[in-house]
Image 1 (cartoon, one colour):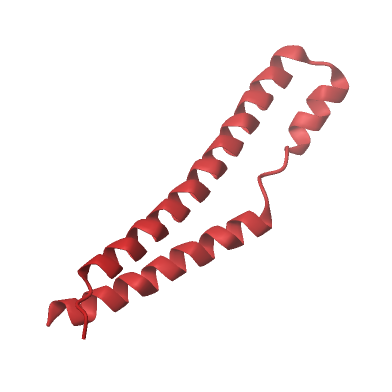
Image 2: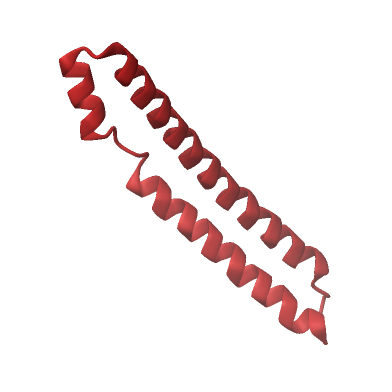
Amino acid sequence: MRNNVIAPALLVLAVLLLFLAAAMISKGPPQPDMELHRARIEADEAYTNMLERRYERRCLMYKAFVAGLITGGLLLGLTAFLIMRPS
């Protein structure tokens, strides 16, 4: 009885996660802040390096979040198909 409810719920969640991943990809990665542009123009090396590291960390977090959404969606979909019983 539970599998009759759990499997479709997992499939809905899987589709939702994949949809969110597609939305994040279509939005694109984060853009550099105005602070970073200003620091580059003013040639402030220390501040520019700090802001570039922060920007790289934001880009890495974006990629990890998208990869997590895709992986989670695929795992939920696979789990849903594995627990379904043939009718």
